[in-house]
Image (tube, rainbow, N blue to C red; front, top):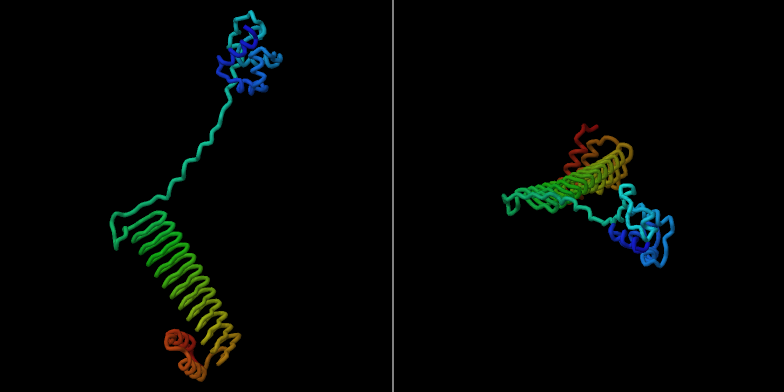
Length: 277
């Protein structure tokens, strides 16, 4: 057998393709093809590598008359075939756990816990129910980042009774509040109470009221202030007297619409619940 025939035989016995053998020896596939067809002769370095790879002697590879290979235990183990790495898609994340009651109330499950929850008691990213808790919560009683309901609590809140960082409602409590009655650090309302209060009737450190403003600094038609009072109709610094009460009450009765009487009465009682001079 020729050297080329022996190389081809050893390659096939060890289950290598010409390309794989070429990669191991650092040559091209065409070089291996030429060796096996005896069109070219391997360099000594390549013959040594093949002897180690196939576990045979140099004499076997070079001597056409030699038919006996060296014992494989004396040679280095064959190099592993190239490893091919395949991309495996990562397992899907576990879905949002969902639970729903079979018992119904007002046509809704007693409770529903899920991504989009709808039930008498609903908990989820998007929750709607009589009692709703979620990222977006809508219900009679709602608690959430964005909360809408009759009684609402959360970050951004809209409700008849609203309590949140930013709240809008009939009765609104919050750092920034907007409502018929608004109470907060900054408040806007018909009756507004806060650090900065703006409304028809305003009570605060800095109060701006359409009709009445009461505070340390007050500005309105009727202004009652401690350090500053700017009133387009009437202004008082410090405590109010009986004469002040009579004038302010008469003016308010004649100028404030009837539907705002509740706010007018609240503010008058608040302003004049002190002893007069």
